[in-house]
Each structure stands twice: as C-alpha cells, then as structure tokens.
Length: 168
Ligand SMILES: [Zn+2]
Ligand SMILES: [Zn+2]
Image (cartoon, rainbow, N blue to C red; front, side, top):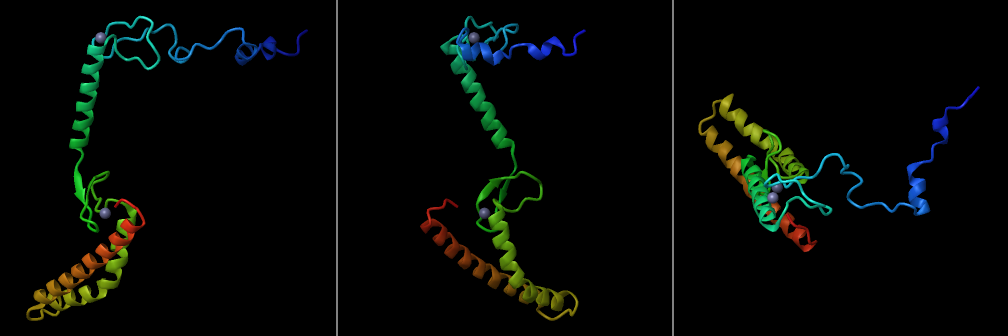
C-alpha cells in the first residue's frame, strides 16, 4: 500500500535545465508550439519567427509600425485636455473633474486659496447678502489681487524648481 502519491517524486522541470541536458529555447517557452505566430499585418503564419518578431517581412513591419503609431496618436488625441489651475500647463484628463496636472500643484493651489479664502468670502458676502453697492467690483478686486499674488508666487516657485533641475 502506497502512502505517498507518485507525483511527489516527479522531477521538477528545472532539474533538466540545471543538468544542461536540454538548453532552453529562448522566446519559444511562453509562445507554446500549438499556436503558430502570424504576421500582425497580413496574417500569414511566420516561419521560424525570431523572438519579438511580429511580421513576415520588412514591408509588413513598416506598415504595422505605422498603424501602431497612428493608433497611439489617435488615442492620445481622443483624451480630453485640461488646463492646470496652478501652472496653466495642459495635461491629459484622467477623470472629468481634474483641474491640476499633478497633486503638487493641487496642493499648492489649495494652500494658496486657503489663505485668500476669507477675504474673498467676505467680499462675496457683502455683495450677495449685504447687497453692498459695487459689491461685485470688490469681489473682482479681491480675486484679481489674489490672482496676481498667485502668479507671482508661482513664478518664484517655478524659478526655484528650475534651479533644482526639475521639469515642471
Ligand atoms: Zn506580413
Ligand atoms: Zn500644474
């Protein structure tokens, strides 16, 4: 009576490689032998394809690469662009409500407006709730002043970043 299944004693596949009896054929191991590779452009089966070979000849390869590039370009063009509220740089929108090119700029923007918020809110309050005469002008003035300061800050921040060798 056997207590242990015979599979316990099967030799691991790596043992053969380590012994050097059967050198690994690079590129073929993961392809499998059952499905022959076909030219990505014309669909003809590839005869003894090299590793990473996708097409049967240079012409097909050129055409295939061209179509790949075109598709990539189209995909990039299809993405909606946003303009960063902090650096005015354009970026690919990953989600609908994205206003910043990177988390750092969102942080910088938030920090800045946190300080400016109360003055702006006061002006808004006077305009909408207090119905102050020329209230909207005050709101605009507060906002413009803050924007100017923001621009100034941003320029300085950028100068520091550039001197550090960062690209932003
Ligand atoms: Zn081909
Ligand atoms: Zn930005």
